[in-house]
Length: 97
Image (cartoon, rainbow, N blue to C red):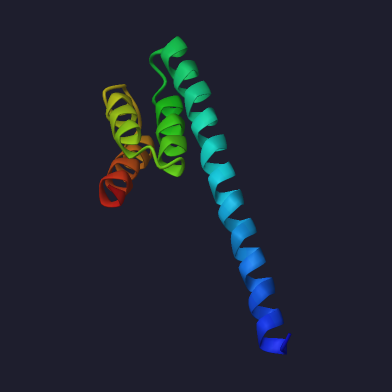
């Protein structure tokens, strides 16, 4: 095996590992979303929990859920920083769709 072939093989093994880790991370973010959304619904009035849940959904590739939950968060009383965070999630999820 030539040096180039050896390097290519190593690169492809690392790429495969990265792909596996990315899929695993998406699943973990999906699980985090479920828990954070449940926490947000238990409290009901905390927009920070909705922002966190929406961000987890975004990272999991659950764009419709990210938008839906962020919009719920925007209906709660919150400061400008939290509003901007919720709107950022909506914008990023909309762009990613």
